[in-house]
Length: 484
Image (cartoon, rainbow, N blue to C red):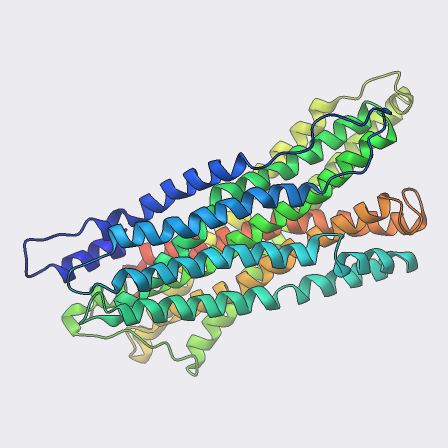
């Protein structure tokens, strides 16, 4: 919307006409998202009733059922993109402008679609990668971890290529639109923004699929605690496995949108520095990482992502240890808890987890907010001694580039490795490689225990980290430059 406002002023600066279409376009996209996702949801339906013999029969594939609704949302969204770009981004000066931006929106929509497919390949136990982790569990805990790490690392490549192609394509189409003839770079940025909005055309449906994950997981827990038939648990296990895939879909989708958004925020940071130094007629368009101070700042940016991940994982470990100690204490005081004659004190465990969830996130939160500020001010002071009053701003720019690149890869790794580990365990529990209770299953449980904090804590937090450091850098940009 800010880009649209700036472009509107430049396009119509010599006339009384003002285009609100550039500004309200993202709001219309969200309205389209709500509409097509709700329509798509109506196509999600299962077979009614049970077979007459009282058995549960052959299970339907829940993911296929949900994807039917997603395909409907995708098709309707594709039509909607062309409609709203024609209506809101069609100008008398250039009648082809809307086509370029419709192409940008379609690239973003295809981005989200392909993220769903790629994530499913790496995290669904219907595909070879998760089956490979399950097979490796036959030889022990260590080989399970090794296989899971390998899958997680490999899963970062295709999404990175997809993000790269999408970023170049949307920027190039926006650049060619020449919606701002004297500023093609601004046109390119708006094309990237439209591509980012294109990813959100089916966002509501993808978020609904993500919400399905924890619901199915908790339903399985209720079934197990209420001692229902094994056949019922088989159904909820399959639903839980699909939920792991849909949760991974959303996390990959979030990382992809964050990657495009951070490019825009980085460009906005560069423009903000030029605006602050407009009296010096400075063009701040290049950050030279051959400069040792700039290179060092970038390396620190990458290390911040690793440090943040360490803090997030350690927070889970500390909370888990506290809960385990509490459980052992309660059982030692009352052995009837194990037989079901006595009820444990659930509230105490919930209290421990809640407090840890808040307290242990203070350090990662402060790291996210303070790291770009400290880097900028430190190198600004150093720059004043070496005669470079722009060193602080350049250092923060390098910090953002490296932190964003590293964060995207790290988040993809955590999300997909965690989902793959979890579903490898589900595949074994379905009766493969010895089934539940076997030595293979015990190894898979270890992998799932490692994977849970990766996919549920560290991974989802990193895309917030990379957005936050970009926003903080933009807000505090005046602190990073010397006005002497």
